[in-house]
Image (cartoon, rainbow, N blue to C red; front, side, top):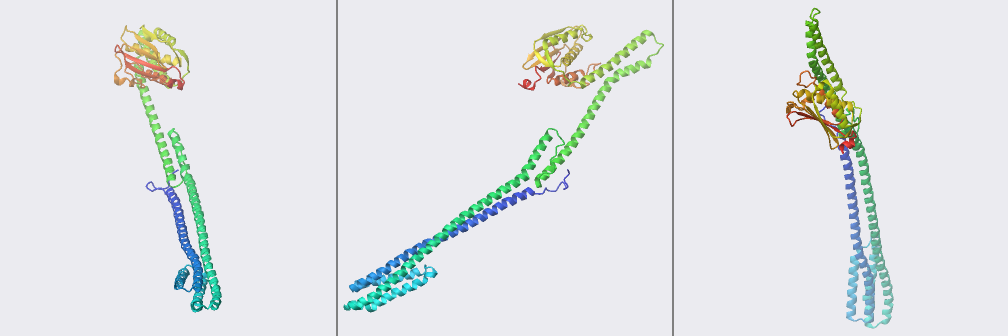
Length: 493
């Protein structure tokens, strides 16, 4: 899948827009919720302030009703005893009633304002009857006139008291209504706050679900593709997942895997061609010498030559042909190095038998092989391990001076069994101790350069190690360590 956008273009910012939209919506709803709650709180605060004012007005109404009744009481006292002190007390209470009516008139609800006017008229009528008729009659001792006027005063006083009580009840009703409004506003605020909280939660959940679908699924696909890619599966692709930044990342990942797969294929092909070239060069180099000798002898051979000479030349040709055959066999062994047929092996008996076979072979050239073996059992492919040991013994004999012996030792080392073959030769230079295991690397004339490479492949197939060290007598010691068991848990324990 190819990205149609040019390489330099920025990816679409879909996730960034979703984040901005989601947080923006949540912020707007949260701000609106705060504004509504503040407005409701302000309204409740205003209602509470009004209730406090109404409470004061209720108290004023009750005090006004009491003052009207006290005015009537003081009026009656002045008529019974028209003493100047009684009259002054009455006048003071009358002035107090008038002041209270004036103060209360501003707080009375509009539908009840008429009661204030009636209350004023009734108290003024009471004063007019008292000052114009009742008080002069009382001073003159005219009890009949006083009784007649007192009846009218009682009627006015009763009506004034009723109006004062009605005003007090009106103020109580106003306060009760304000209390209901405050309660309703409080409930409305709680309901609005709950709805806003639910709205914020709903938006948050919806936004989280959308963001999860937009981010989590592409990330899971990217993670799985990366794991497969890390395991060497270059066919791993993310495909069309997500949009915006993650979609662009998935496309970039797919482009990367395609490019790396192509580079890996080119690299493998290059390494394969290099390996083939190296193998061909090595084989050609190793086969060129015996083939050159064979061709040289074939050019000079003639039927007229002495039979003895022909016999020697044919023997040389046979020896060189055998060398070509040995090179071919070493190549086959090198190719089959990882094929094993495992079985339980008595290490000491196995190595003793291998040493005996070597002593009887032409490769030993009558040399002595000193053996020191420790008993142990290991799991191995016996013929392949024997091939390694025989190869090391052959190399040791060829590297050692005439009339010297080589050593074969075996002992347990932890969970491994280690075999050492030591020669009496010049040893292996430090710079050559790794290269001796490379294919076709040999400084010995007539060698194929594959023996130690084959040995290395067999040992590694057994999950073992092989190395070369300097011997105590100056020669070389080749050390092979094989695990006693091929079960991974036991080897790693």
